[in-house]
Amino acid sequence: MAPDGQAAPPGIAGGGELGTAIAAEPPPRRGAGQGIGTIFRDNLFKDAKNSILTLIFGGVILFVLFKTFNYVFITARWEVIYNGPLEFYMVGKDFGRTGISFEMLWAGIYTAVLAMGIGSGLGYDPEAPPMRRGARMAMIGGPLVGIVFILSMTRTITPTLVTLGVAVAMVVGNRIGRRLPQPIRRRSGWILLAMTALAFGLITDFTPSNIDDFGGLLLTIVVAFAGIALSFPIGVIMALARRSTFPLIRPLAVGYIELVRGVPLISLLFMGQFAIGFLFPPDANIPGPIFRAIIMITLFSGAYVAEVVRGGLQSVPAGQIEAGKALGLSPFTITRQIVLPQALRNSIPALIGQFISLLKDVSLLVIIGLQEMLGVVDVVLARREFVNQGYVPEAYAFVGTIYWTLCFSMSRAAQRLETRLGVGTR
Image (cartoon, rainbow, N blue to C red; front, side, top):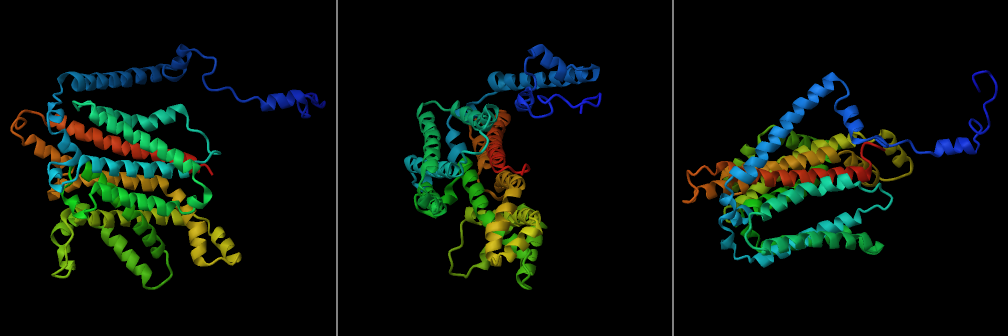
């Protein structure tokens, strides 16, 4: 009704053409039609308090950027990276003892990346909101910075060319995954599992014991992703077992989870190196030190994954379980098709946080004498041309950049997955 009690004009309130046009008109974008000065004034210098904070934090940011630029491009001595030992940072100093050629190693890397590309293509949803340009740049910016930083330390074009091949394998795999026919998609899990096993075989030259001579970035990635791949199913099984009504299964799951979560990871790593042999028969082949570390990291992470997944299971409304029972579905079918998909979807943010933590925990291997990236730093700095020469900041800055690149890449990929699945929005 109009303010004077009369009926409003039909074009406005009655759904006429004018009202339809007004309702259909999209809201103006923030900042549309405004100049740069207006946007800065409204967001950074709106009042005295905001102006002071803008000047303070702007000065801090400029100072940090200036010091970083001065260190990276002027004062830093990067010969500790590119003057010979760059290979140590990538594969370790004992990689030559494995007899694995770099061609075989790159073949395994290409196979693994191709599998990742196919997996991302299988999850493509044409109805999902497209990724904005800024989000896409943020997603690829971290890996790009790390790769460019590493390649800038090389002296030939060969590393650049083979690295570009990784990007090509990812794009090709994504296109293949999008175009796979439905019968093959139903078996995509087994295909990706077979490709992953093939990639591991190529990287180790089909001799798993070669992994004990790995080091540097290669060892970090192998241990981290093996721990992630193995701890996830263990965590899901333990979470389901902890919610089980069977009188024996639940106490065992609770005992495992609480025991492992109550012990520091470093103590488990020491136990794996010095005590795990007592669990094997006297004539059995005891796993090497890296396999022992993978076992302990997997058990440790599996307990935390179990608690994360248990939280996701509790977030599923009980009414959906009751509806499944009313339809005559078995408990296994209800768990597999109704409960687990929703629980895992709700658990994605916490799961990614746990996996990033696992990746960083791999640096603890240096304490038990394994030469992952931090261990390689000690080896490099002990060389005659670098000992007591003040190269410590450059070496650790390089390793820190690699770790940041890996963690940032996982974080951005997880955010893209959350957006695609609508986590927190529906």
